[in-house]
Length: 248
Image (cartoon, rainbow, N blue to C red; front, side):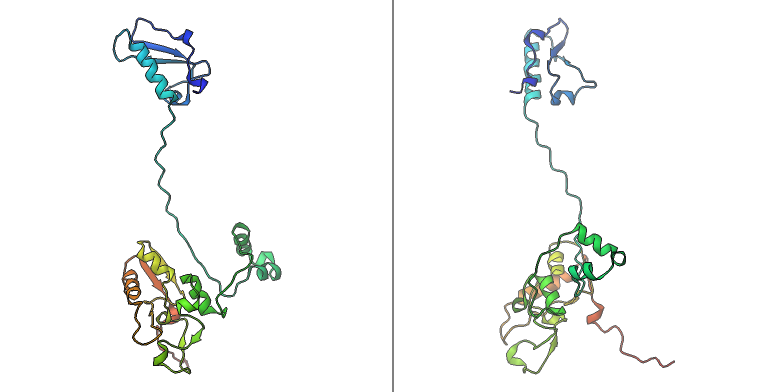
């Protein structure tokens, strides 16, 4: 038992009134101090009723409450936090630090100084924009997420020739779930701004005709993107207006 919890026995006083005075040589324990208006070595306890055993009962109760380990308090709810994923195409930390003056990129330098940088990374192959970003969004390489190049042969393989090409930036070619759909399906608010392979439902195209094992994933993605908390746009993959030439 903690010695600070043990009162000096010779200092226990039992006056004829309905009060008990207990002396703690090392000062009252923290559990008792929290109930006192001022710090003192003498703690006064009002007894519930007059009884010859009341002082002993009160002293026992006082010591039990003071020396018992504190009850763990309920954890405070975690504050709401936001995760922001930003991609700068072809940005290289070392190249920025070695080739650009510090005053030209103060925010980048602050980000590098206060964040964490990988010593090396194994990007998607080939390390070009469409497959590189698809691997970031899905956590999988092109053999799984379906994006292997900026322009690639379409699927299913047996329905197209080797000379045909589709854009790897289009969501129709995607065969894995991107992070914004995962977040929306989990009930989180998500905003996607000009992300590759957005904003529509991934096509999950089959490798061969008749194979449609990913139909359930397509339906899940459609339901997630239809939620009000999912706001995903990409002006690059949509023609907002036909091309025009202004002559005047």
